[in-house]
Image 1: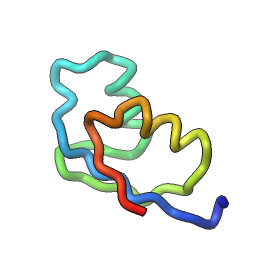
Image 2: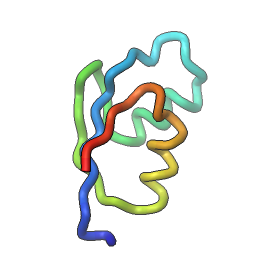
Image 3: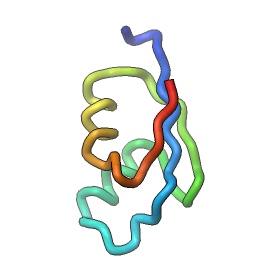
Image 4: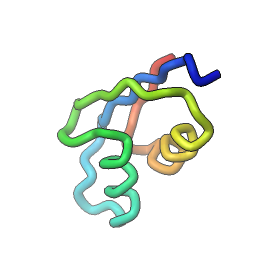
Length: 60
């Protein structure tokens, strides 16, 4: 499972969101709008993505 990757893209601005959601986005390695990161497919990363699902787009 750890050899799989997930591509996460920030598609909505973090302006006006909760502070812990902003921290989660930064923890995923996303900075600006439309920035993307390729991350390991782990339960921790999936939980972070689920928390800010309204801000990001994921690919396989």
